[in-house]
Image 1 (cartoon, one colour):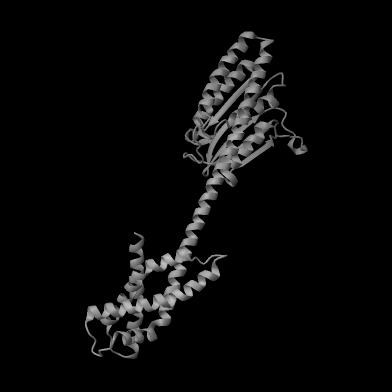
Image 2: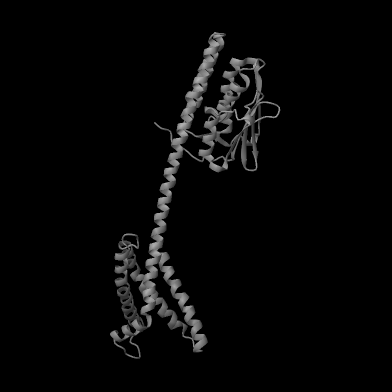
Length: 362
């Protein structure tokens, strides 16, 4: 394929200069010998094509690079006239074999010398153009290889950072869940036993998907519901959860364990200390190519306007994961609701194909 393209390039080179000669003859001489002109340009181009592999090997052997530039330029300065004269000799011999003896009956030396005088400078330029194209192509190839290597390294770094963040969530969640069990053990042993059973089921579902950074929203909501079943045992009627999920978002991909730390944060800081309990609203919407997820409680809020909100593991972890996964295409906002409570909103591109996939570690 490579040499077919090079052959076509040399053919295009011949046709280009044939058209130039055609216009020159038409304007100056009035008589046009397009067949002979086309033949000469094609033959000259194809003799250069025959020499191209050797020129390319010399270009690879003596690249125009820093540290090798002077030596390479010196080598090519010597090689250019040698290849140029070799091309002229091949052209004259091939032309004589194809067309037969010329009327002027020149010797081989006279014919070569005639074309050296007429074509030497053009041939020198052709040689350096081949070297330039070769060096440019090689430079672009190496640039792409470095770019691909840098991209792979960056992807691995992001995967490692995401793995670290995800692993941070697991012990954080487990600690809080076990703390809830500990509290119930003093009040209701049966409830604590049910909570441990639910916790076991939740951990089994969560860890089974631990190799993925993203899962379907419907799967994330299933995990969230199992978590809420645990908290419902603890708070009973004091906890009310309302979900408003656009059905078109259920197949969208979201960070695994996205909702759980945010809901846990809302319960801990917005509801746990209130005697009357509270309400948590969970929303998922598809707007203008973005998936918008929100968790809202009706607790005391975070006093954000007074600068008193300190992001714990749940909020800071979620913010970091969004940045690593979606970069500047994501948004994460924490604000106080006017009527009281805290609103946490995340937005990132709506997608159903995995952005970063990590193979399960065995």
